[in-house]
Length: 223
Image 1: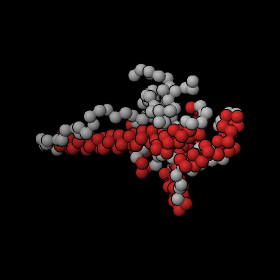
Image 2: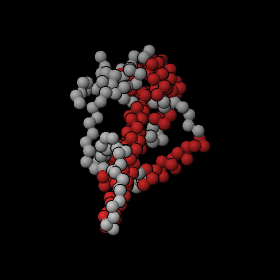
Image 3: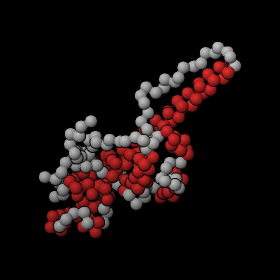
Image 4: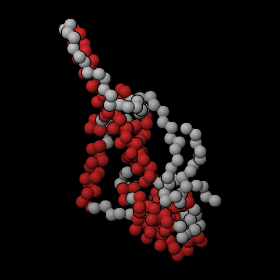
């Protein structure tokens, strides 16, 4: 694989979180398949050994053909980094839980009317400022460049965020604590990682693909 562009796009925190969750789901699915195939193979070998021990000719089922391609092993360190990154980006104090693809694309499109760099737009998406003081740490020389439009930008950000029902906030926090592990940032037993740790240790990931960016507006360096 050849890297065509070192940085073809700027990804928002929401996009990174979505990619990590998709990667985690794919790895979990592959791990479950690998465990099932290994169990079938062990049962087949046990049946063959039993048949041989009794001196009987018995037809033994052939190895499973479920896997068409080799399973990519996932290193323990990579799983830990993925888990910690997901926990950080999905924390309550992050705006990612209140964002969506459509809302972010709409926000970036409306921010185009203001004198903002691509990096500043990205920071506005990531931090979702709702107070003027927050904009001061994002936009340089904000008073000269934006004048009286600060409130307009803050209103656009508020409109891009969806409200979280108060009744579900406590349940979400409880669920996150339940899913979190107490050691090494690993997923708990119910999520299937612990059973596969012995077989998933030494893979290297080449994350050199191109990103899609947000609405194609954060795809390159500032001019």
